[in-house]
Length: 311
Image 1 (cartoon, rainbow, N blue to C red):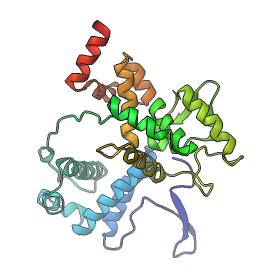
Image 2: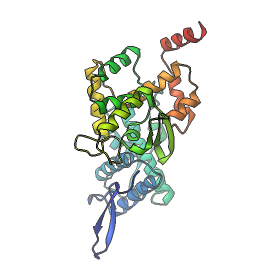
Image 3: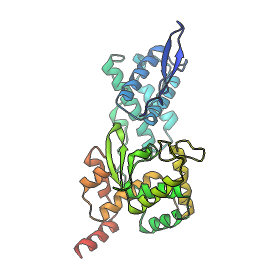
Image 4: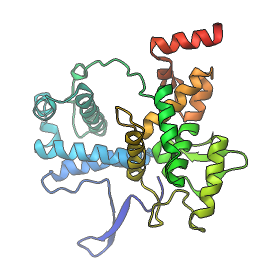
């Protein structure tokens, strides 16, 4: 999380400057005591180096709940919580309901620890037990279509696609790359991942050639690597558009996302016999168990791998 992106300065009633964080809640419909609790909770997430996107996710859903349920926190019951979930998310997917319950559980657990409430009004059995999803990745045919379509893209956009496919970086890691983070000669890039953790990733020779060509045409002196048409830092929304449009151009039957490219990178490594520990390092996973989801390949993939390595 880079400085200057999460707060502004205002003047309080006494005429003194105060810091207002973007992720704080200031809605007047929420009781001041409740606002204090939720902003303290969001502060703990901020200090734990959660991304601004994550903070905004918590802020939006907690604000909605506290406006819809205007009671003091100490008066909120389990019936209030499950009633709110059923009214607003009863017809939604189980993953959506689970997500909202996770947000509320985390917040109320914090409130209980800090003495705002005595009991957490969210029951663990409300969460639906869902099977672990198999990552959505491109199969060999889809990948060939994407690579072919990418060859017609503008240089910067083609570079972005190749960087995703050959390094497996997350979208926010890509847009936050700076020019001096990248070593073309060594084909490595210094990434700031989740929790401000640094790691080095590798990229392909094709990616290195595209990088050199792109550096020759981009405005000189700007520290950010990927710039938009106006010379400003490229946003995650802009990258989503680039990737989604490429999927349509390639004739894919489903939406193409940056995360699908990341999954495709990991799946290709696994198909080629790479160790899960190595894949975990490349992806920047803090826990090897996170990487194990890539071992849950469809049976036809496993059969193909057996034929390749065992004959």
